[in-house]
Amino acid sequence: MAKSTKPAQQGKQAKPQKKSIARNRSARHEYFIDETFEAGIELTGTEVKSLRERASQITDAFCLIRGGQCWLHGVHIHPYSNGGVWNVDPDRKRRLLLHRQQIDYLDGKLRTKGTALVPLELYFDEHNRVKLAIGLARGKKLYDKREDMTRRDVDREIARALKSRSR
Image 1 (tube, rainbow, N blue to C red):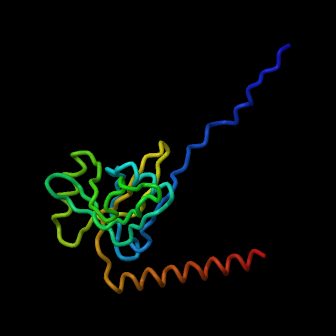
Image 2 (cartoon, one colour):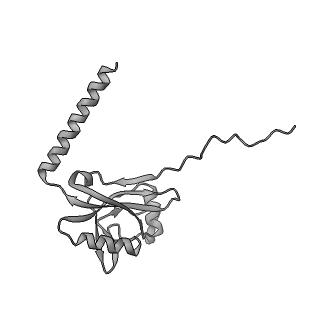
Image 3 (cartoon, rainbow, N blue to C red):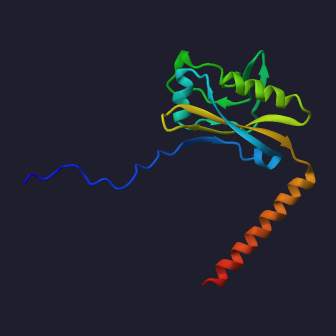
C-alpha cells in the first residue's frame, strides 16, 4: 500500500484576512456612519510600495464627487524610501474606483444637508489590492458624543463587574 503524501483536509479553508494600513479612529467619534462602501484607489507603484511599509495617515481625509468621479483629498502617503524620482506628491488628490451606480447614489445622498463621505480604513484585501472603506456619514452634535462616552463607560463598568463576579 502506498501512503498518501497529502495532509488531511481540515474542513473549509480559512478566508484570508484584510491587512489594515491606516484607520480613521476619530471618524466614528465625530460622525454617525449610515452606510459603508468599499472603493479601490488609483495609485502609482511607489505609493503601493510605501503603503506596504504602512506609511500613511487618513485622519484629516475626506471624499468629494466632482465631474462624475469620486476623489479622495487629504490623505498623506509618505514617499517611498527607495523611490527616487518616481515618488509623487504625498498629498495629491486620488481618484476612487467605484461603480457608476454607486457614484450616482452617493452624489444624490450628498446633496442633502449634513452628510459627508468619510474614509474609515485603508487596507489590503485578500488579493493584495489597496482598498478604502468609506462611510456615508452624518455629523454628531456635542451631546451625542457625550452620550456615546457615557454608554462606553457604563458598558466597561458592567464588563468589570461581570468579570470580578465570575472569579
